[in-house]
Image 1: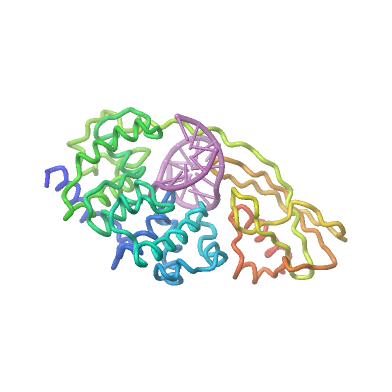
Image 2: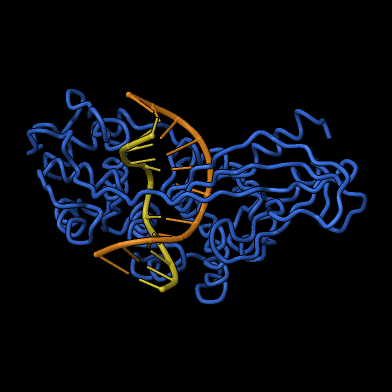
Length: 327
DNA sequence: AAGGCGGGGTG
DNA sequence: CACCCAGCCTT
């Protein structure tokens, strides 16, 4: 162990958050938690994780779960392809790996939804393989540590920083805590804005003069703007919801019609709402349109709540219906 | 290399 | 509002 590693690990033992998904951890729980944590704050995924493990405790269950139930468990968490890939991955594990996750970073990385970071995290945390797990936290910490000004959004910059991380790894006995300690440092101390350098256990190794300027990240493109009008068909105490068929955004989840019915006897406007995604803005108007007959797509609010995955983009309208009309 | 893909916490 | 999070996949 180098002094650097010792200082970091000592800090980690004292300051790490008591994350529930690290309690009696096994490879399955580590896998699920790492997928849920992709581009997602830890606190945001915790309740999802607890519920998911309860309902889907193992790989055989996951491999055969109904898509509707899976989407429902993922509702509101975002990046829904993660859930689809989770199930695909479980099926591959059943077919190729005797119902278990493979145990090396190289094999894990071949599975759907598991990239370099997640493969490294599972391999090092669950199986103590001495490999890196480089997420946004670690890129930030090491770009500052080595004062690297390359753009970490581009592959060259990521590669340059990653090389430094790989040089720094301890042996398998300490790799799990080491990788987690780097991420925890990034989450608690070496934070994006106003890093808490006075609290940093490795500040004496840090080469940057101005951590506020690092890491260098190219700006994302401005979002495109789309306008929609949703028509919520109402029959008695039921609403019509439709499964989103187009491959793409929110695929497989449920939304509202964007067409009026042929016949309706009343229309009531709802309050407009704008939903911001990373790459697009939906400026939505909506109205209730009352019809005099139903089809199989009409459901009560209770049924929708229990069985149908509605993305967050549409829930403000559901809430309006619930509070203003008490269906 | 660039763009698609969610949602929410924080300043 | 902007920023960015325990990223991955497709094009």
